Image 1 (cartoon, one colour):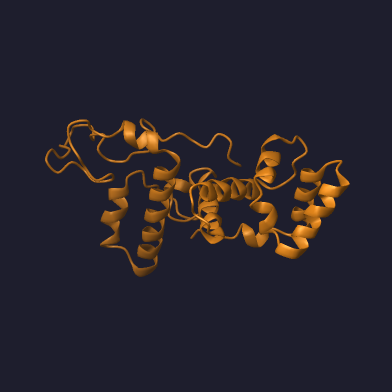
Image 2 (tube, rainbow, N blue to C red):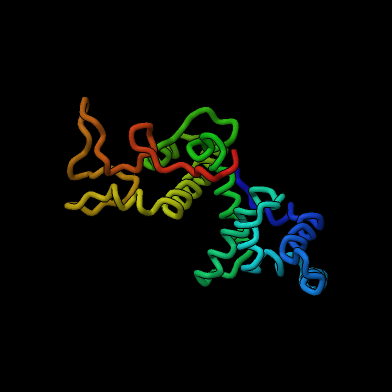
Length: 203
């Protein structure tokens, strides 16, 4: 199960590193950033657009990929009017987890079964034991959030032009037949029709 843990892992050494990156050779700016850190806590740095810009452009950045993802997600949400550090922490944790190997298609790190269709997870819920059902529900929500949030163009490109459907369900008016290739009305991240990968994500 994916838990929001990035903000909790942000320590004083990380904070001072961001202060040094932000201030560089400006002692006054460094003193001001440190004073703000002591008075308002680490969010005063993580929410600063200048920190985001520095993380993206400075060649001496030593922050963890998870922290970089958190800052990017947090400030994207702020720009969209969502001022919730807890939400940003969870979304960034999902992005970081799903960027590793095939985790996006598995309900847990130790699971070997992969799901490339939302409908397949829903179908398994009816026969799954309590613990597996919980993991399926959690992954169903996380996968939907990840796919719709990061790859909306991928979903839009797969939308049939003549029918309106709920993503992740087969078109009940014209279901797939035996021996025929599944229609593209199901969300698929299979080898033949995979969502774009996070090329910049940590491996």
